[in-house]
Each structure stands twice: as structure tokens, then as C-alpha cells.
Length: 258
Image (tube, rainbow, N blue to C red; front, top):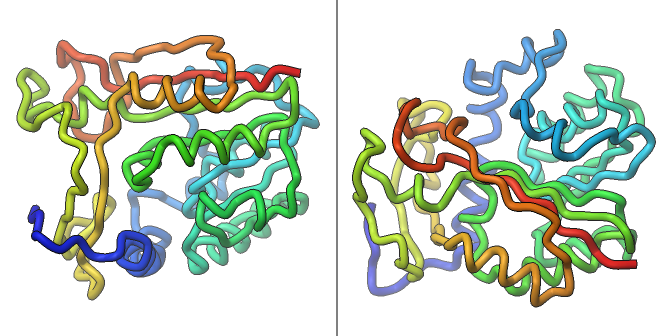
């Protein structure tokens, strides 16, 4: 990990890196596309329970990558749209939808901050954001305002994310290895990916950010959304071992008032 004095353009660097990740992720065992086509579900157990019945409801998944979570909601009856800034990811998700017969699923290429324009001002019953998404966004205030603009009045955001405390823990999950309050851009130069550490990408530099839990909740409140719940979970972090004495993930629902 490096933090040079000059931070690269985050959008350009991150998109190039994620574009290259797509074929690696689509072909590897981490995402297990054949297993997904055969019926494997990718949502955590608490997600469907907290969201409730989605049959016939419109659901927008921001930062959808290959679309597995998007299509897991489609299998539950939601009318889904996935959005991602990587055109190769959107192409892979569109292909995956065809393979499982999700004819109504739609995937759109766009930066999150431009989502309202890319979706022609449409609003959705549910806006969903899944794990490992917020760390790629520099401005949560702008993100929350964008999310709020995409929700139909009476609808809600459902966010399931890695807990920011877990993100700064040591590998054994029992002590802090990083500063929880660090907010400067984190520039990482790494040739592999979490899904395949042995991969060798050409676009190796990414820019990420840490966002505290209070920062997330405050941004949503300031955007006019009403927090319905915030739950912390003791499992489902990709790096922190089971049994670590710290929250690993969290989930929240925030409603746009009618």
C-alpha cells in the first residue's frame, strides 16, 4: 500500500482496474458463475429477512459488478436494474442474466454519481447497495443525495456493508491495525485481486476511502431519508476470522418519506 503525494484521478484509475478484474472474476472460483447459474444464492441470510418480500417491486442495485446479488434479488421476484461504472462488468452481468433466464433484468453503465441522469430520472421501490461498495466513493454526502433522488416516495435504501471497525482490524480480528478516523485517500498498488491474489493486472493502482458508521448515517439523514434500523452482525466479513470480538458487517434501511 502506498500513499503518494499526488493522488491519481480516482475514477480513471479505479475503472481501469475494475475493467481488468472482470474476466478474472468471471472465470474464477471466488464468484463461481457456474454454481450461480445452477441456483446458488449470493445474499447473506439476514438480507432477504430484513428487506422482506420483493415480488413485483422495482429494485436498483448500485455498483453491481457482475450482477450476482442483483440477480439473486431477481430470483426472489424483484424487477431489477443493476448499475456499474465498468462496461465489461455490465456486459458480463447482462450475459449472466440471459443465462439464468432473467429476461426483465436490466444493466446500465454509469458512475454512481451520474446514476439519476443515466436512468432518465426513474425512481425505484428499493435501492440496494452491497458489500465493498462505499470504500470506492470519495463523497458520501453526494452519494446519499443521489440515492435519495432514486427512491420512490415510500420506498427505501437497503445497505449491507463491511463494518468500518472490521476494516481497520488486524488479520486476527483482535486489535486495530489502522486508524479508524483516517479520511485521506488510500492509494493501493496491487497486481492481484481479492478474488485471485495471483492474478497479474496491468492497471494495478486504485484509490479508496474509509467511511465511519456515523458518516454514513449522517449523510443519509441529511439527504432527507429516515433511518428505520441499523443492525450490526458478527459474521460475513471476507477477511476477519469467525469469532473475532468485533462487528464484521452492518445493514441498514432508510426510507424516503411520502
